[in-house]
Each structure stands twice: as C-alpha cells, then as structure tokens.
Image (cartoon, rainbow, N blue to C red; front, side, top):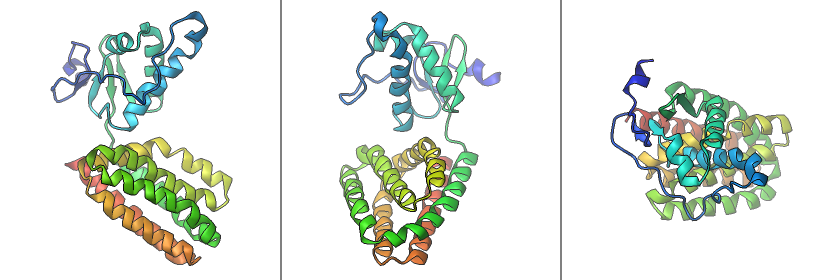
Length: 253
C-alpha cells in the first residue's frame, strides 16, 4: 500500500504530514499503568485499550498520527503483546489502521463519517426531543447541571474543549433517554464514540463555537420546560445542522 511506504520508520507517534509527535506522558487522571504480574495479564490489553481509546477520542492522539507499539509498551511498562491486542481491537472499531512492523495510524475523521453520524442523530434526536418534552420540568432539572458543566468547560478556552465535548454528549443523551424508547437509546449509544470524536476535532479548531452551542442548548431546554415538543424538535434540528456545518468546516480547514 502506497501510504504504508510513506510512513515514518522511527516508530514514533508521527502525523502523516511528517512533524514528529512524541508520545505524551500519562496524565494525572489517566488510567493507572497496568500491572504486569500474572494476575493482571488478562486485563492488560483491556487497560491499554482504554488508555489509547481515551486519547483517540479526546484528540491527544490526532488523526494522521502514527502510534508506536514499542514506545507505548515501554511507556506503560508492558510487553508489546497487550498493546498489539489493543491496537487490533481499535482497528476493528475503525479508529486505527495497522501497518506491520511500523505502528498504527490514527484514522482521521472522514467526510462520510460526519454525514452519516449527523444524519443518524437528526433522525433519532428530533423524534426523541418531541417526546421528551412531555417530561417538562423533570427533564429540565437533569439538563441544567449539564449546561453548567459546559459553561465551565467553555470558560477554560481551548483546553476545555474535550471536556465540553463530553458534557455535550451527556446533554443530548439525556434527552434521548428521557423519550423512554430503550431501543433508540441503545442505537444512540452506538454513536457515542464517533459523536465525541467529531465534536472534539471540530471544537479544537473552532473553540469559539462552543459558546454558541451552549446558547442553543438553553433554547432547547426552554422549549422542554414549556413541554413544547414541536419547538424542542425544531431547535434540536437547527442545532444539529449548525454543528454539522462546523464539523464539515473543521475537516476541510
């Protein structure tokens, strides 16, 4: 494959456009470095999986970066086997693309992925907002703290955008759940990782849009507080279409 031949062979996490990107040191809130004792071997791959996936979703490992199996195993104090197992699982989820003896390429967010995710969200969330509005003040009481979390993240500026993306997802998920359709909730949960990754990439390039999204969320909550299902659905639709435009622009930038 032509792309594989172009990948850097130093086995460092490297964007495909060539600027070296050192593997980040574990953050204070990161999962603990896995125990390599016999009792812990069974969970080592799961721990590596969680460690890497968190960083794929929050943008620490950006699209186009080449992750080093050897370097990551040294960083976590593990053999390469659980790292390789985690990489294989993440490749199956479409987040990595493996290149033997070279590493794992972080798959960038594709234009088709943005369109597919937002199409699915529009279908689910418009319907759920219309039904969830019947909950009125009870749902508003659940949504207000989530908006407060978003505002706290916005106040941090660019460093808070990954946290904003998580709070944004929780806000929308609460509305879907309140509609009371367990099948639609499970369907929506299946979009979780893609939704968060798209939002993180979009907001990293356009952090100023987060403030506008908070205002739009408040408009949705206002409609739900009045138990106005038609208004809630219309505002959710307008909000998601605006977010889709931001995601398109961030990818094309």
